[in-house]
Length: 336
Ligand code: UDP
Ligand code: MG
Image: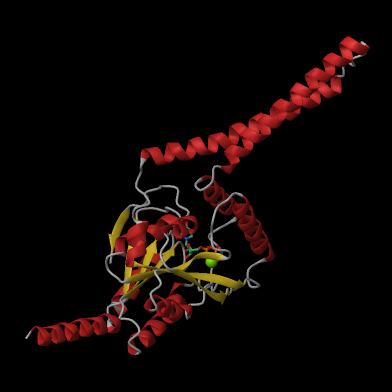
């Protein structure tokens, strides 16, 4: 009797395991858009094609979706999104009340939809990131990975300037002790579990590339070559890029503050030596030179370092000020 019960239980267990393995995952793709009217139709066309294929191959469930997050666009981006929704229910849209910036638009989409799918993929609207990699992302997810990073192998399509500045930024970040995945931007898959963990990070100054590696979980990378922007121009001009880089450093590293302390200490020792040296010259040799130049130089030197140090400290106080207010990271106007 107990033996047959054990057999029945075993069979039930095995069957439930099989069902779990065979469950088709529900995928969501989140795409932040800011003034993307020129390229969005093409992006939609390509995604629709891809999703149809994946649905037919039973790689993703029939209720998988693509959600555009309109980050306060001033052009017809939102009207386009509403149109996509009408022509095909796999498309969804979230309209933010104003422009909150790429990272905030991304977190808006991820947080709003984290409970509606098994995993979410974030992607740019401009087709610079190969959409076919989505298949590999899903494959890795089914192999049990919770975080899959898209890594740009070949950036020859980016401008020299963009490549150079990006390279400098990655190196500088590493120097500052910030762990990010080299050549990975915001093209990645996050499982529901990883998204749940991400929702616990409440910071207002967002730098997702720095946060995601802190989540932990099983992760891997997929390499692809980065294409050209399909249409329109970059929404990251130099000024935004510098601010973003600064965000990445000041919200993840306190090494600049340590450096100020170290520079201050070295200068302090240096000035002590100088005082002793001047005293010795005066007392024993009586010929201390009252140099105007050296005085002026040291005033400028110390002054410069002081102002720079105050600036860096100010950056951190500024972050604290912003985080302390706990303002919402995004505000939704409407959803379709
Ligand atoms: N983006 C956004 N809000 C912004 C700036 C950009 O939602 O304030 C979106 C933009 O529409 C695109 C993605 O973020 O889908 C990345 O921007 P972009 O392609 O211009 O950056 P780049 O590839 O040049 O670094
Ligand atoms: Mg781009």
